[in-house]
Amino acid sequence: MLARGAILARRANLALALAPIMMLAVMPAQARPSDARASCQALNGIRLPDAATVIAQSYGAGEFKLPRSPDPPGGPSDQPDPPLPAMCRATLTLKPTADSDIKMEVWLPLSGWNGKFVGVANFGTGGVLQYRNMVPPLIGGYALAANDTGHSGGGGEFAIGHPEKMIDYAYRADHEMTLRAKEIVARFYGKPPSRSIWVGCSLGGVEALIEAKRYPKDYDGIVAGAPPNPFPLFNAEQIWGAWLNLNHPEGSIPASKFAMVHQAALRACGTPVGLAQGFIEDPEHCSFDPGVLLCHDGDAPDCLTAPQVARMRQLYAGPVDPRTHKVIFPGPAIGAENEFVMSATQPVKPAVDLYRYMVYQDPNWDWKSMDYAASVDKAVKQISPLLAVDANLNDFLSRGKLMLYVGWTEGHNAKELASYYQDLVKNAGLARAQNVRLFLVPGMNHCGGGAGCDTFERVGVVDQWLESGQAPEQILSSKVSGGRTLRTRPLCAYPAVARYRGQGNMDAAESFACVKP
Figure 1 (cartoon, rainbow, N blue to C red):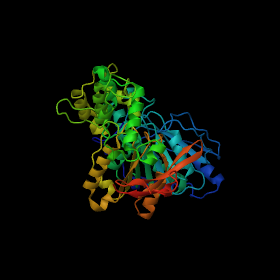
Figure 2: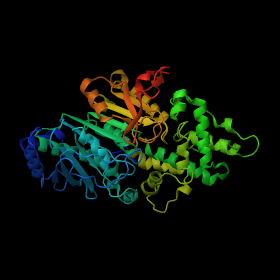
Figure 3: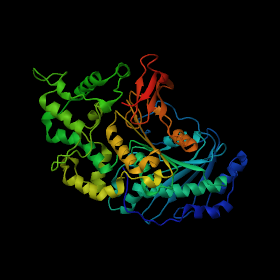
Figure 4: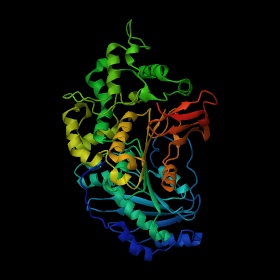
């Protein structure tokens, strides 16, 4: 969770901060390994603004073993952690306020640094470093940093009675980390990074938008995956299915029927390629209605009762304000029916945590008492100033590049992000609009996983975009399992979609073209 709000403008300009650092630089970018290790050792004990002393240690290639951390976004990986290149690992704690306790790490390649820096986002409700997500940038030659969002543990309990920790979680931890990390990079390599890129998905996607909104000069390029924005409204949707089942049990749908509805939607809107690969390729233009599954001779496994048809429509639509009858946040898209199984009996925990600990500040608050008028109003008033980002990112888009993406078979309806993108473009004007691109990924679950091609480059795409000035109109994506590439296809910049050319291997990207519907 994350987003916007009133901020403490209290930090010195980074350029001024780096000036004295340049005189203290200890390591040229292409130093010998022995020099690099000495430079890493020299980081020990340095003091940075609002931070405890740095602790640094160097590791040879393959020596550093990742600490235990949650599964990466998209679910557990079936691949072992790759051996890491030689690096200097610097750890420190940031304390911009008396109640702050932000743990961060900076990883610095001992050789082969490409001169650039990556900020790695968090996930869920934060509370840990996402070590597995820190590996790809390091292997790619980037210096990088990540933080725990200012608290320990993966729940929202930290927020009760700690407004400063809420600010750290929402935006201050990322910004402070970025400033301090760039100082460490400059000390270690003898020069600041030539380019900085932020990458994140889910919570990290909202962190990305917040960075673009609040601190448009922190990063030159930003990757924002599946940003559930604004968080309070998205979390209201994540409680919706369980709340409906509790309060209106007559419409409850068993898990087996969700699978049946998914197959019906696939038959209705799937192309031959989509039917073969197991997902709808263009859900935005699918008009499937669950009413076609209405039972005509009593309840049965292959049909829906009238209350179940109504329930299915409610789930697709998303929660509705009982006063205005307007949708608060759309439900998952057609083709993502399996998402409803996950929240049919219990709501998503981070959603409950937001309302319980951040909105109501009450560990005894029960989601079963959710009021889709009063509760949402309270959340918008209290949390949106911290955890929502409007569609005006002009300050960032005047100088930086923004890549948005989201999967079609996850709980976050891709249509909502498409609408946000359209508002961004409208507000940006023609010139700045060239600095933002959106990619909707068919068959991909939340940040990864699913039947679609969910493996594709993010940081590298934005880096090349910054280098060439040419916006990406398509990205190569793959479906990988057990270390083997099963198929590939292009991801197309919105509103274009990948269409099969009508001949050739359906599992090969070259058999597809990006076309606008």
